[in-house]
Image (cartoon, rainbow, N blue to C red):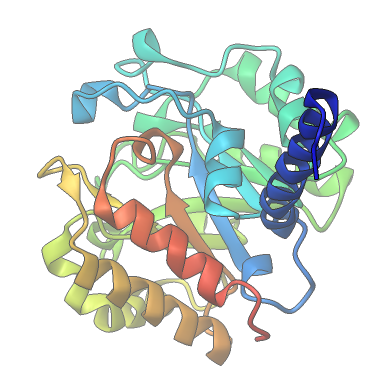
Length: 298
């Protein structure tokens, strides 16, 4: 049977559409079913290439692309530090950045960013986001605690945090204040702050110490028993500038999944878009793991 050039192009177009629809089917996983693993997964994102000072390699992946690439429906947007800003930062107005995030389920935005960066004018922009961002879910305090036991213990005073919390909750009582909590913070006197934080996200940037996840989680439970918890998972070891070893990546992901099933945590966060297009084996392993377990019921 002879096929005209026009007919061949038509059939080829249908074939390409079929292939594309397979990709779109995967993309639709960004809208997860309630009660599935995927519904509890987050990606921690910064402006494209803002990690260049730390890794020394260019990344071009945007936050929205990072969420799409991993197949994760929830995102935490974090402003760059002063050191990172020359390589990439989220320039106001922030509402314009949220347009690309509309397909996602939940968006959290930092009022304290990388390296503890914060600015009153940007805080005001973040607190106005619920007016334009239907999937807005709360604010993030990244690198919030200074690691000091006296003096300036955090990037905001307790009164400043209390004011932000009051304004946030007046807008919607369900909005959360989330904060980064490193393993080095366990012994610090932070109770006045911890009482105003809804969700603590536990992070350990040293791949070699990931074997102590259980012990570290027990310590954060003791330090902040009332706060809900999430597990933060680096895919790159910034100290060594290499991907997290796959066996350790597997360990933290499978531990997090077990904690999700047990109700110990309510989410797993993967950091981040600025490391996902650099060829690290840990990134592809994580992507495949999410594809495998994302649809499972909790």
